Image 1: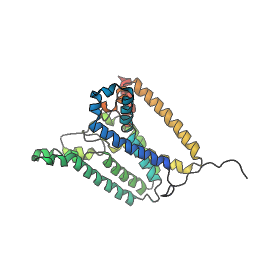
Image 2 (image 1 turned 90 degrees about the horizontal axis):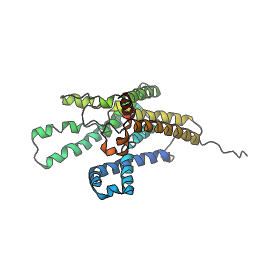
Image 3 (image 1 turned 60 degrees about the vertical axis):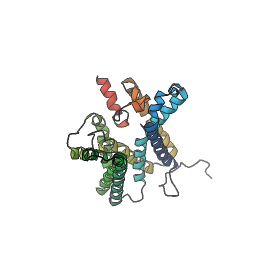
Image 4 (image 1 turned 90 degrees about the vertical axis):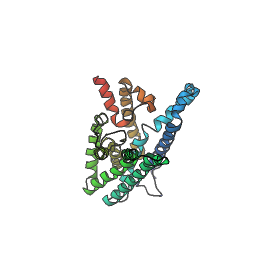
Length: 289
């Protein structure tokens, strides 16, 4: 009998056999985003004005909530979404398109509840109602998810998902250097809404697909590699080593070249400044200056 333990092999997940670590990452990301947004909306400003702001324990808790629910939360969930597509039993284009449409409709419903419904508590003027149209089509995370499913539907339709994801990921990473500081907006509402699905056009654009698709494509490609390796433990250790090394380098660049305020006070940073896609662009800009 061989006393040596066999390497832990990857098995495609099913309803009975799931990757606990992936589910846990999604769970933490979702809970962090919910807690962070609730805290940001109802307590953060009050906390800064309170005596508790001077308490190191409470201040640390404030940082943990604002950081976990801010910088890494959305990218982690996007990465896991790409992983989920990798391990789907039959990720054909029709199913992916259908899912994309569903998510876009959910995004419209959420935007209507948040942006438009509140103004009807009073008798709004026509101009005020017209002014809410950009908010109805605000490119928040549901719009990004919907477009991402369309992207993967295209990748599977041409039967080159790995190649398409690799190219898109590289282009998105490069775009992260420039897109956050390039406003393509105009006075044309329709143009802003359409372009806002892909690039930054106004304050209602949070997740343009060209700047964020890198996370979902990275998740998909990571999953492809996962399915090919035999030793799960060794693969995770190597992935952790590479990830920590990249994090250390980019964090050092950020702290050295002007990213400190965004990292230590996430709520004080602009929407464009503290998210990961343009992390390097902030550092490079400071280096050039």
